[in-house]
Length: 167
Length: 125
Image (cartoon, rainbow over all chains, first blue to last red; front, side, top):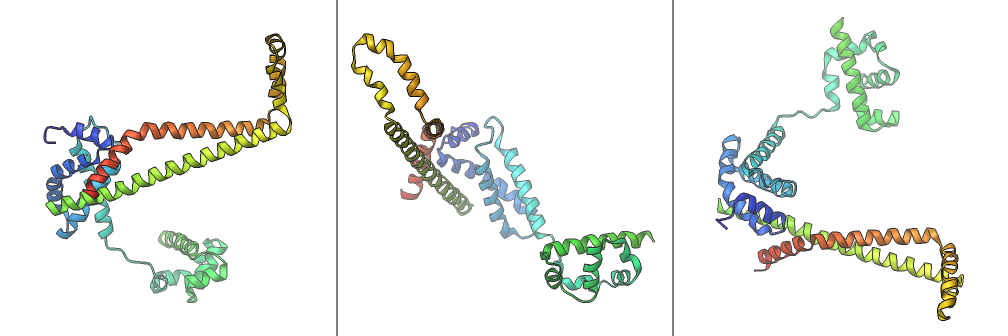
């Protein structure tokens, strides 16, 4: 096994001899593990990421050109995995119905005649929200899915914000 | 680190086992379905030709060589005209798909065989 080059191993794996993949795993695990470990907030998550890297590489091995070196390709996968990891750890705030109502500035806008800049549907929905209706209730009233209502509200808010900032 | 390596290899084998077994089952089912459909279509065509008594057009083949030579082209053309073409097209399409599937299976035979050997070695030895 030790005499085989990476190129030969990839060829063999492509030919179905998947037991040769253990050679790649043994050769690169330590290197990738140490690299990932340095980049993570929680060290215990390194195991999962290393596993994902090798699984992704295995899944892509059919398309992998054996003439190319493995290491840069593996590190490209590592980069992608890390990107996904950081994205998943990014603090996010879920949007609740009441967030809109808590925003006093937008509440003021609704009271003004800014609403005339919006189309009929957006205006109606925003007026319902200012009256305290939830997205679910508005969805039922307008016979539209809740996500559509959320999109309309978002669009309306952006429009109002632009107009407000201009004036 | 050794534990992690083993974990990765085990996961890879699990994925590959699922994939290979799924591939074998899919290919086998498709080949069986295509074979049955082709056979069914062929039997329908033969049945139709039987009902039309189109095969009687070849009765002259039992005669002497001179008769065969003079009637062969004419009778063959008549027979072709009597063929149920839409069904023939479907039959050939099914046959082509079947041949294509068999070719793919033959092409992948070595690969699948090697995979099965590796899987067998890993899980059962």
